[in-house]
Image (cartoon, rainbow, N blue to C red; front, side):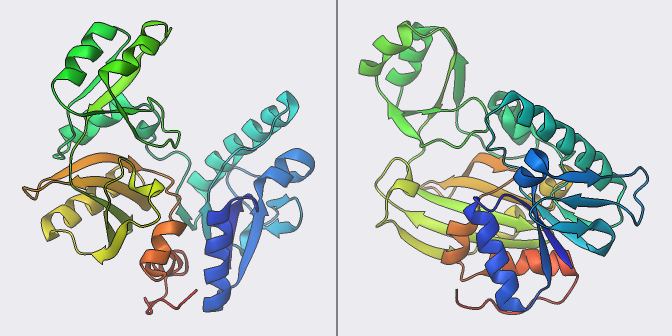
Length: 298
């Protein structure tokens, strides 16, 4: 039985559970928000047969042979936050000792949460990253912006819409108390690559928008990336301790793949619809150990 751990308010969790239903895969939902807010749990070290989590439903963890986890915190009170942190600490330690397939363990590499370190890691591992600048100095940003089209990016791993920054925007930056991360805009198509174990599933998007995700009319297609790049992404995903990752690229007119990030907890449902369910099928295969079957319509 697969365990699906997260919150029922997360559309990605709902999407994956729907594919499990379509494929006839037994699963139990571990609603971590309910568990941390008003439930209970037992997580032993080493794990034993009495371990459980109890929220909307009680799940005996010994019955779970694979676990897909998306720990998105949506609480508001300090008391709930403390309970959530305790649950996450316990789950992280328990998963590292448990004999089951996990997508992804909480102890896996999280460099994506601080983009400058993330970019340094990507570059050191053979990927091309667009020129970037982190600074609180408006004059340095002005020189960077003057040299070519520029986008502003979040410093942390929080999802945000990419937008272009121009010299006329810098008056607001002058009054900012913190640094800003800017990056050279790469013109070309967007390519999103999902790695699930040794499976590589890619989509290509063509749009005139700065952020293609905001363009409902963006052209989209399933896409094959070069074999050497696919092999590199499989290797570098595994080296981070990840089973599942979403890699974002810009593909320029010269055929160069510019790496924008490796997302360790991809919200993949939008891309899965483009790929006709292939990402969900790869996740199910990984979590159950069964053979891959062609994706179904959803």
